[in-house]
Length: 201
Image 1 (tube, rainbow, N blue to C red):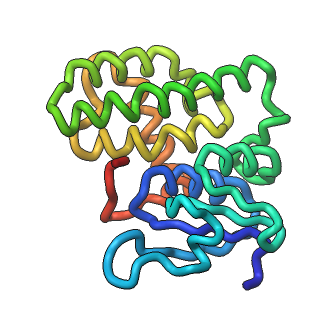
Image 2 (image 1 turned 30 degrees about the vertical axis):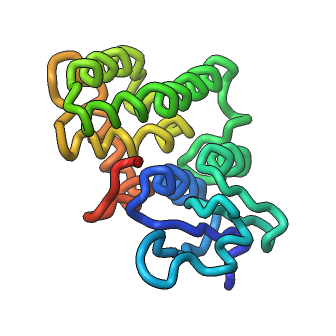
């Protein structure tokens, strides 16, 4: 294959989508290789060798010298070398880096479990409350300000899914709503939106 960077994915997975957004917005040439996670035949042997856990996404760089088999590790790796609309981590101020880290933590430690409980168990008030808390710290137009960061990559797949089924448009959710609109007008993010998608479990 021509590109040094390979992205092994299933396009319906939100964890894979956040890595996909980072790659699309990095300006780094990459090839996509899709795998079916379910169904007859199972996952191919080459896939298991790259990630014995059997999960997507996986990114390989420099041939297979560098293998990243976790979406957060992929964000870190891409953030270090981005040449595109995604702001390189080293080009962020200390304050911006702290903001990005907080957003990534809120998505993985709070939104993912609270969102899952809301969708499976119908406990929407807790999710709405969390969305309002998140709304209050949106700087705009992107989550951390004028520039797109890894925070946007991490947040979009999860907040977009919630918006698709439940709407992010209530009182106290306006800044998140505006942010989603900005994301959907950002070509690198728009390219990762698919018609068929999964939740995150």
